[in-house]
Image 1 (cartoon, rainbow, N blue to C red):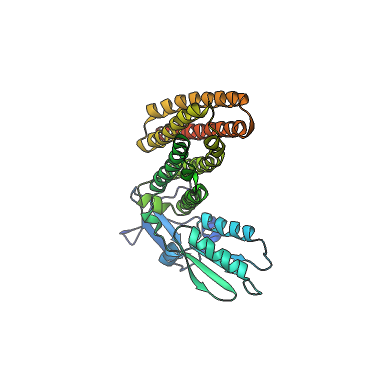
Image 2: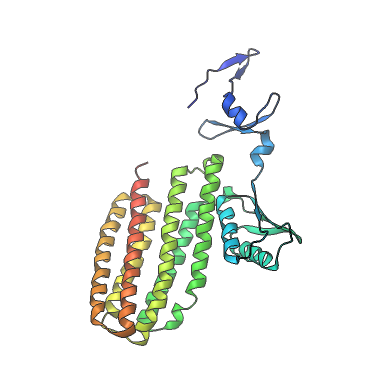
Length: 331
């Protein structure tokens, strides 16, 4: 920290000098205007360029000239979105291809808060219309938990009722989980670049970063929900002696996931520790299922082995969330 002494000028105004290295690095010159914004904790944020700079959003330009790989272009758009830019400009000196235009349209429809505001032969402008001050990452995490919980419950219901219709549509539901994970990652980057947002919301950067870690664990649990749904079909078509144990362990894993997120939102260290202990037992149970799968044959044997692996990973990700809950109580 650079410490400066307060001086008085004109008998009533307080004055400090700004570090020259910092002023040079942000382009401040004599007679320039800077913006000053008081914070709830009593600190003050200085914006080079004044009020206009404080409210100006960042723009990321992606040159699609010569890009023929749709997946690569889509990943670039997702990367720009997660980085926290307010506007994304997709352009091409030779004119945007129909592939680039359709990719941009698909991306804007998928990512939360984006709209295509301008489009011509050479460029597309995508803007974020969401007020970041109104979006709390913790609320997004709660929504992810509900979506993933419902996915897991439906897979277990499908096994219990021998109803494959309950397993359909999982990839589409997982994409909704992915969308929220992108949004939370984006929010983390935006908050890190502008600490005034988190302060206005009464949050600190440590808590926001933890939202991102929990979001990532939930996103991966969502992936395993899809794997469970795809691997349960052989057991529904050809029931085995392991079905009851898989169902019981799966139900317990769903409860563990929900409880782990609850310990984080409630900042309950004792419950979080119990979640970790329960998770360790569920990991052991999943390993027992894997060992018992050796007594099966054909597709059910392979399916039971893969299911045991997914159940184990869901338990481990839930334990990770509980550990984050314990860490958050130590602030």
